[in-house]
Length: 574
Image 1 (cartoon, rainbow, N blue to C red):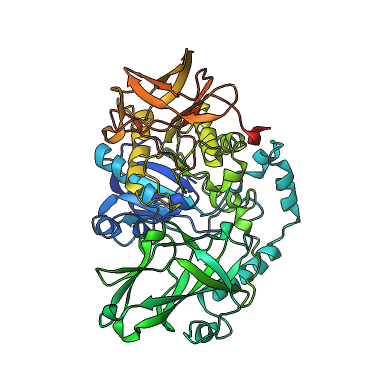
Image 2 (cartoon, helix red, strand yellow):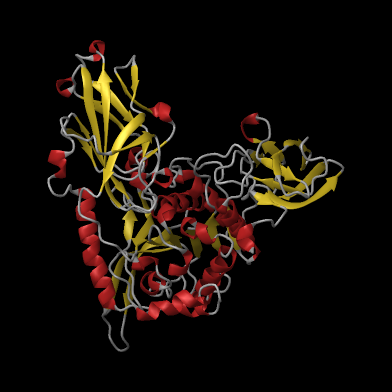
């Protein structure tokens, strides 16, 4: 390790290291830049690659920024903290290196690089489907009663457990990706007798089916009648919004294989050569994993079409499970407390950085209230390890997701967002609210450009001291006046506004009975005033309090208001 004095940003340079009394360098580093480095970490939304995100082809072809450098820490887990990382190297940002790099990390770096004109490095250390505890050190987690018991339970894990899990994982994916026991020759056959299979109405997902805890491969079949006047041309099949990956067969012929639900469309051409006038068979082999499986609504997006007529493929389907070998149980040790910290953070700690960007929280939704304690543990832990004072910590609040509720309801997603907002009480922290750019049907919203931009606004204001508006309105206080609630905000900037100029939405109020009703809301200067005819004596107000809220309050810079509530009525807190 070497430590250099603060140097002017620029490059490329050559760094030479000499031993005393030796005129020749013992180590040389070519193409060295001096600039600002940020650690990008978290779970799948931070890990989502440029090639998987919005406008991928255009973004990749335009990614020519030799003064942006990328380092990707390979996935690894260990029982004890490591000093060396597993693999990885710094790369120039170009159309090759950027493809599988963090989309948010790249767009954040690009915004800063373009405006500041200095080299930016992004050190990516991410792993999808991980809780905040996996990224936090054992010592810090032992200091909290919330996490102590699970940390101590790790003491029974040995490296041999990792080996077995790795072998089981190979078998797991072998089954998921490759039909077993010649099942692909048997069940897609149009003449196969499925009379003993269970009937089910589609669209429907696993959590609503009679097998809510099932993990494995499920076969689904449906008979589709094609009228004579649609015969003689290729048809288009739209599967709507299937969950997880699947293989599609039409009259026994494979149409597609292993398409994930993250794909924006599930539309396929069915050649006329395999279509019959009258009954046709539609078969899917679908993975039911991690609580997912089946089809998401709306039903109107599941159909076969000739460009003019549409035939629905919703309604009665038949399904059968346990037709293939049972998939192995995977312990997912990468989700265990501290194991990712040990392998993917501890070895990186000495590196000089300018701050952190973080996107995680989905895997802590079931323990949403305690996240307000667990998340600050991680922030304090990392700051202590880096020994650079209150290093800037910028993070993304959970996006809107899932089916929209028609009436005000409790929500663990809203509760976790509140925990993220509470974390702003820590010094030198900033939060990018993205409650307006999520996707009801995709836990991985694809507009990562805007997420990176909003994080960069925070960095520009907090780190580079630019006089800009970096946040949307944040609840400050409220006042009850007769049947009205008046609400004040900070981070108003040039003033409050409504997205798309519509009626203000997303507010609900309740009286002493704790029953919330949608409220009429209007902007009065820098206040919002809300009322509801069902609540003549209001005591509490909520905004954006839902998994996927319909809310549209912004400031005139276009940044969304942060969801909030003024009450603390929630069973999860008891």
